[in-house]
Length: 435
Image (cartoon, helix red, strand yellow):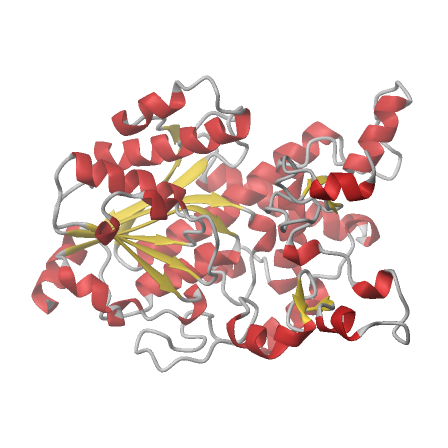
């Protein structure tokens, strides 16, 4: 089949562009009469010189977005695109948007962190390398060790979905996580009426969809789900709800969100904060959002933890805990590199693994590694839990009972730890007096 025939083939419904970073084709719908979606349509510059372009070609030219070069835009629509692009710096007069309110206090050491983040592990001296590992081991043995228990539950509303045979492994993995998180909410008696469930970093709203469905099934008509995300995404799962009034979407960066000023939360008596996927610093921004606002109250916190390599010294809430243990900005930057050892498998790139597979031999430890793969994985897990424990200490200092649980097995996801917190009785008494 020729390229022209393929472009006109009505069965070609998805974009043919190969995404190198994701090692797959683009999943967007192809434009009518084209093999590609709008974002990946070949530019006219690839087929003709600027001198040879017709007026129509120039009119249809796509250029990289100046705010985010990962996507392109029609040149003729650039001005309009810049006003709606997700990458734009959003200034707002909305009362709940306060620029940088949850970002953390900027200090001189924070500015040095960018320099520390460029440190390469293989360039570290043995003394510094093993000294930090020993500190991590001591903190882990003292505060965590085997204290994290399993709490792997299911929620009735997802049983039918989990038993479907036509779902792939990735879909079932996501559903298993959502089912366990909803099961924990139910087990802790948090599925109640007159409650606002605020999902931070909601993305396409899969967890919110099943939570809203569970609320409707239990006829909790005075509860609502409020989704917080800084981006406006397509194909949102919450759009499929029969009763769309049960969900409210707020477009805001968590770093800029003043929770007490959200008018939606004034409709209910309780607030439950939750998230299924808060990458690194976003978890700390969320905790600052919940705890740093004197007028905000949270009756329960459930956050599935992940992506510790994306933590930031400025926003990290457990700085006091780490500093007391002799871990400062430089050590923190190294620690956020070590955490990747917990989930990186062999530590080899996909390209190198593929080359080794075709060469029919297994990867071996190289002489440049100071630890075995098993040792690196163990240290990486300990680094993650130490960072999480710093968050627990921060919550406890603000009057919360806080703990970590394994909410799904490791064969579902290696990022299988959830943070749970609720106010202590004294904290609740104080909240009731102030309200």
